[in-house]
Length: 85
Image (cartoon, rainbow, N blue to C red):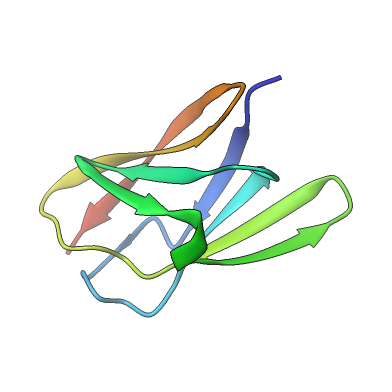
């Protein structure tokens, strides 16, 4: 079954913000697609909480509103929106 993102916190912010947190079924994800940028999971902080996984990532450069998607071997997750301010 493909990964699933329940939410992103915060859903807006500035590039370089220390952490944005994705929550959901993300265990085993290999990368994040943050707009047109690829962020390796090894560049993030991952915490497991039972059926939920939190992935903390430094917000990469960007503009406007972008879609964030998690990827693992069995497919891509749904996308959630992040807006640069």
